[in-house]
Length: 305
Ligand code: 13P
Ligand code: SF4
Image (cartoon, rainbow, N blue to C red):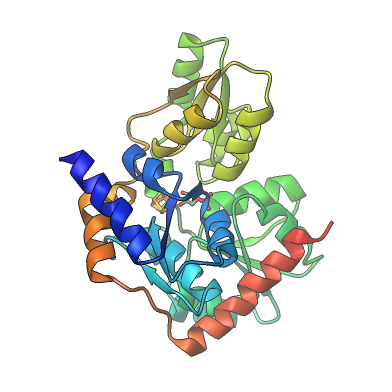
């Protein structure tokens, strides 16, 4: 059954000239068939660099597919399950952001890439979890509104030793990992190092050895001399980590670190998506143009030394 599905997907992706992108939180079988597996930002950039594809099948969540659509206006971006959203991205609307900005005249707005296209369009500059510190630093002493993730915002505050005005959004998946779980796991595995995502709570970050974005976790795995890690982020990345560093033992810190919407992609709906060309993710031109300014600014700052 799975073999038939894989053969059909193989045939259809060639016929449709499709490139398949998968986020590191996707199920293993989806990661294994993808052309590229990376963090959300890396995938969007890769999509814009693939010269001979008409269609991008984005296996991830809505805000990622929207970002790919904004950066690749000439291509169809499809999602196998368009209902796969990100609860954190939905914790601030464009109207709420306009109100927040009105309460802080003159402040600059930094939005985490985990946000809707409308919120990006209302922001001065975007950031990802790997470049948030650099992006905020580039703004000098200006008052900064940081949306929607309060925990990534607190991480930036700590790194830069300055205050930001934080929205109170958070990732319900990463919230589930508390410091007591890390302490218990460390007792069981005293020889392991602990890596967590900056979307975890500050007290959880304090109990870890490394606070890293998903892309930085993969980079560390490729270069580190440590041989055992406790991993404090979504379970899908364990598959990616084990593939890039098979000589390292990776242990998941908690079964609760599982993002339900990331698991909505299946071999069956990837095949259906290629067959039917559904569901296409589009962003209204005016919103896309404004959101692209915030994304492009992030790319510029991120690339600068
Ligand atoms: P990345 O931007 O690191 O891919 O992470 C996205 C995400 O949803 C983390 O929870
Ligand atoms: Fe959103 Fe959290 Fe899922 Fe990432 S893990 S997609 S932030 S709900």
